[in-house]
Length: 210
Ligand SMILES: [Zn+2]
Image (cartoon, rainbow, N blue to C red):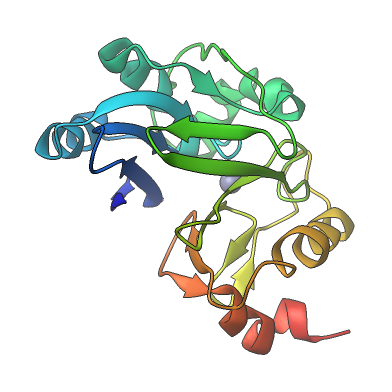
């Protein structure tokens, strides 16, 4: 599995470029910004991008999706429960002081257990509401890797004070969907350093308190 992680935009969203080493088919997850740099990685690995997956509709994760779609022709995946947040991108842009990216069109709304494929790689969709209603994670079982969006971070969890957020829901998503994964699963959070499910299960203060 080819996997490059590039922090993009002022909030340093972890954008993943993933590819099949044999077929050179790939996907990009969370192209929030700096699409030229993302495309440079795509070219470096000679990948043909088949899917653009957005873990949730916050501007720092979705801001570059349309530019990437125009460059690659790949469809944009975003869970339907976040489509209303897409209508607030102007407001979101004002929150963090970046230009509005314009209208984002969603091609496919992935739900729980849907598969997102590129070559031999399969990411299984885990619907994990809480940070937003339509937050998803992508689980690559064979590669033991989880792209977690803003649901789980090293030592923390996603904030739930923004529109659509729910502390109760994020805790049940974490306990029911993520902590059931094997301890050795590598977690790629939406921001910051990588971790593992085992480490978070043991030490994350939001998960250890009963
Ligand atoms: Zn977010």
